[in-house]
Image 1 (cartoon, one colour):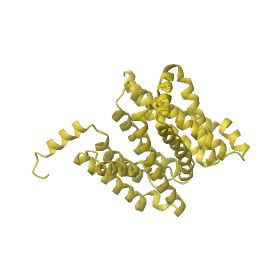
Image 2 (tube, rainbow, N blue to C red):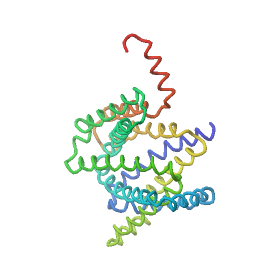
Image 3 (cartoon, one colour):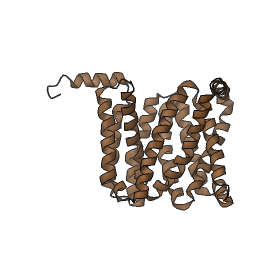
Image 4 (cartoon, rainbow, N blue to C red):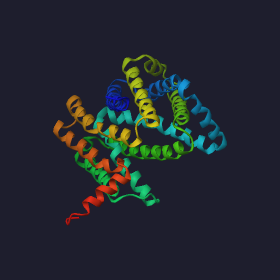
Length: 302
């Protein structure tokens, strides 16, 4: 197995690991500690990578100074991330599967929005985006999310909106700066905001710095982010990386049923598998989609 495949396998395992450990933290720890330990460990990881990627910080900072509005957007992303981590822990405490099902709806809405604003989408991509929205609605009405109280459903809607906003900011910022500089600025803002948010609770700082579950979740989250960006830059195509992370949905939903009794394993497997399959047309390259669409067009049932 070559380096590229090993990194993809590692990303798959890390994605599952950081979600499961964050679920454990949501049950044991004050939710406001999440942005503290996530940002702290992520910034430490970025510091360790500075000898290799420090030049990206210099180049990125020059772009921020040339166009200060980009720095404002990067800081805004950090603020949104901080709030997302807390709301995410609140929802994850009662339903890991519902937290993981935020992505299908937000991804579908983003793709539809991009289509209306001029992005050229192939028919399978329109089908996938509309299908994801319909699937998320079904999960809202019939999946584990339907078992939750009104507060948890509001948290779900909030997370969809925040996730969509962060994705839009990422699209703008990564094109005009670079991933390393963006992560440094965003997670520095997360850390500063979290410190202010927790200023009246010394216990939260102690937990974020020394609790075993928080340390494990923070390390796994930071490792997931850095392994993802590292291989996107130098080894594996972005589409492949995103597809590997999308493949975790069936696994996470099955684990949520098996470990935390969120409906049955069979039902959760169906919801997870459907989300992954419908997501694929959004992740596959356009030329592959066009070829598949042309091939299907040869059949009379189209």
